[in-house]
Structures are given as structure tokens and as C-alpha cells.
Length: 311
Image 1 (cartoon, rainbow, N blue to C red):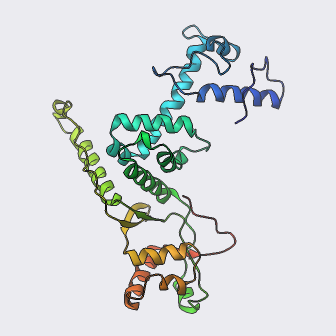
Image 2 (tube, rainbow, N blue to C red; image 1 turned 30 degrees about the vertical axis):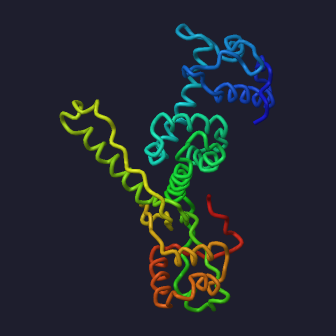
Image 3 (cartoon, rainbow, N blue to C red; image 1 turned 180 degrees about the horizontal axis):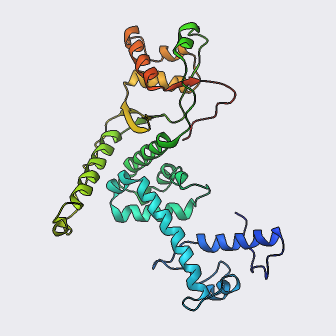
């Protein structure tokens, strides 16, 4: 975003005036809140925010220009905080509420939204965690993988779906010439932790908590400490995060099967991809894998119109 104008246009007389006003308003609304969750008292050039707000926000009989602008500033940030919390239950469980809130605030300040949709808000969170380890220490490695997994869930939920590859194409095309694409909504993950099992525990915990909160007499338990989902120990895990019939699923993969799918996703021919499984994998096992993957609809044709997968 371009730097905002120093002063608001006195009137909107052209498209250029409108753009200046929009930049000014966007900058004011998107500025980080104070520690007390309020509008910053000074503008970016040091002027009083009270005076700056009065240039382009009218007061009313209840609120000053500053107070009216502060409402929009708060609504913007609180909506982002709500969205990131909704998308990251596993990360909250891993870090705890306070550490997660610090991470979320720092992330949104350093990596502000540049998308028209909140769906993309966490797309850069894994990278941010890796680049700023002090925010998640001593659980940085775990936090990065949880963020990666939770973004894969977002991709699986509403990622692009292309026409499924017909089985007859597999039958009539030479393996040495056949290149298969993986559906854009499928994410293949090579993990240091069993994040899939951990996420299932988090969801089960949250479901039980939700059910308990709707039980008569549940208010008497309000003061009890929240039960945390057990953190996973290190164990290399291969998972495909995908959807089927509009439902989200995690599928554990054999290491050899993961190598085959990864090779296909990089553009290898079927012959090369199958060879990646290793010499100890028998053909019957490979056929069973492909039978399952075809049934899940994971394969689509490559072509000039195909775009890269979300990451």
C-alpha cells in the first residue's frame, strides 16, 4: 500500500481524491492498537490523532471523531484476531492462550493481510514462526508444524478441485509417458511430529468442552482449569490432508507411498514415481495404493491450464 497523504482531501472531486481518502482511511483503520486496545494517540508523522481524525471523520452527538475512528480500528483488529483463533485451535492448545495471543499480534502487525478474504490470513504463519522463534520458544518446531498442518486444512476445505482423471487414461497410457497431477486441495506433509493424531485430540477436547458447556449445571464448573490436549512427541509422520464429499480428512501414508505421491506432484512420470517407492515394494502393494488414491479422486490431468498448488 502506498503511503497515505498528509491531509485528507477537502472534498472528493475526482478518482484521485477518492484514492487518497481510501489510503488515509485504510492506514488509520489498520494501524496496530495500543496496549489498551485503543487507537494510537499519534499519527504516523507525530501529529495528534485527535486532529488528524477530525479532518476526515465527523463527530456526532455521542462520539468524537477520534472515538468514531477508534471503533473501526478496533473492529478491524478484533475481527482478525477472531479469524486467526478460529483457524488455529491446535496452535492455541500447543502454546497456551497468552503465548498464542502474543504470536498472533506480532504476526498480524508484521504480516498484515493483503488478501480480499480472511481465508488467506494464516498462509504465511508457518514461515513467520520459523523466522521469529523467540515468540514460540521452546516449542518452535512443534508450533511451525501445527501451523503448517492447520493451513493445509484450510487448503483442503476450499481449495480448487479439478476434473478427476478417468481410470481408462491410466490403462491406455504408457507409464513412461504418463504424468499425473495431484488435486490442488490435497497437501502432502512430511512431519517431525504426529500432528494428525494431535489435532484429533484437540478437536475431541473442544467437542467435549462444547457439549459440557451446554449441560445443565455446567456453570458450576466454569472456574475449573481447562484440560489441555497432550502434546505429541517426535515421530516422523507422513500425512495427506484432503477432503472427500465436502468433509475434511487426514490420511496417514506409508513412507514409500509418500515418495510416490511426492514424485508425481513434482511432475515425474508414472514410471519414475513408482521407482521412488524403492526396490522392496512389491507391485501388488503399489496397485493397492493407486486403487485407493483413484477412489479418493486425488488424480487429475496435467495441462497448460493447471496452476500450482496452494502452499
